[in-house]
Image (cartoon, rainbow, N blue to C red; front, top):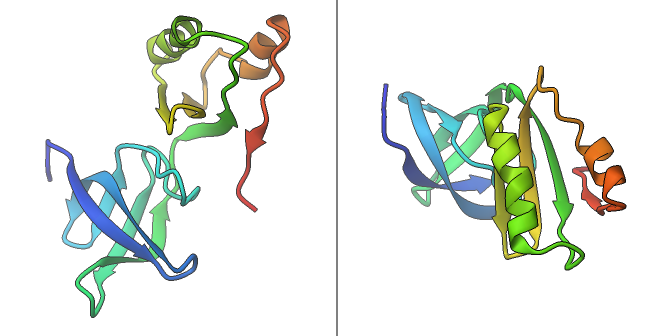
Length: 137
């Protein structure tokens, strides 16, 4: 329905918080995330969700319509590696059809296609890097 991403403000009543995220509009009330939302681990790249406009005029999530086709991992970066070394990993993720983003200079989110050949844990082990993963409870 739409080529260029738009930014919308979303209210998540489960978490009682608002946030902004870039999305593609799929239909009148369904959107697909084109990035990872940092504070709502349900909204990752490719996730489709249904909304309604609440009394405050914000998009309120009703339900997840389709889960992302990507495997998503979040972890804290450390100063053990410099920015260009992390960028090498990011470039490889992109070559494999994935996506990565860094928020606040230290929180990495990686989206890998389910059939991707990259094993992040193996790569990390090779470099003696054991990141602290961020998981949704």
